[in-house]
Length: 308
Image 1: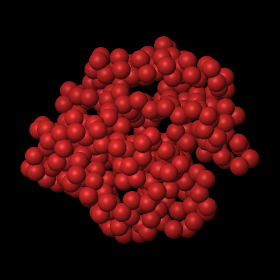
Image 2 (image 1 turned 90 degrees about the vertical axis):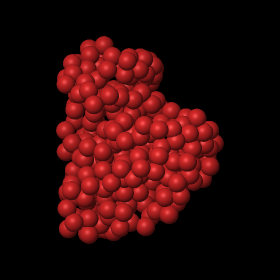
Image 3 (image 1 turned 180 degrees about the vertical axis):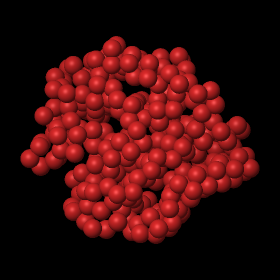
Image 4 (image 1 turned 135 degrees about the vertical axis):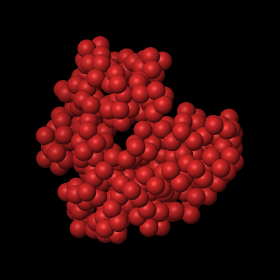
């Protein structure tokens, strides 16, 4: 079954077109695209999606719609997450996506987002009873899903993402030590308040999905161009994440745009992303984390094929 899944997030708008094999649950990727559109700009402070941000997303969706038509997809799903969930004009935005682009646009609850993310992250993996946390750092929120095998258990969506935290704390270029400390303290408080100690203590393995984690893996390997096969399954050490954070935090945004392995459009928010990733690992006492290319897009593809 050929499907198209779009993730219209707070920081990026992404597309996956693939063939799902129902008998095996495998997703053969035919096309994968990602554009940093920063839909969540200003939502934390102003409460609404801006027309400028909406325009960036719609220009990207026009290109994605053409690709979907070219590939003769049988079904599509557009998932709208934290920024749209939190915005006063989120429902009207979703309606415009449905009407103007012919996409099955759905505003996901935090629970639904967590379920699709876990489904995607665990796809293609051998069955295991090892308690695993899947960490999805987004633009407006971070999702934590703890489960065993294919079954998700505890899950929570916490209001700390790369766009939200950057807007809240980083006002200098490069950021000052005080800004970095305040951002880390804010993230730590949000994570520890929202993640019960008994749930954290049970976890033995971690998987990180989405742009912050994949960027960290690409930077650590100095990938140019980006190679998803070398990113998927890559193991990041906590010390490596902390080293990348220290290095990036000393740079101006213009200098970060030149870092090998980092997409230039992620330069404004990658420092906050590294803090979020390191604090997530510290919360679960993980010395290393596995990076996965299988995320909510894969989960959405499997759901469209009736496999989740």
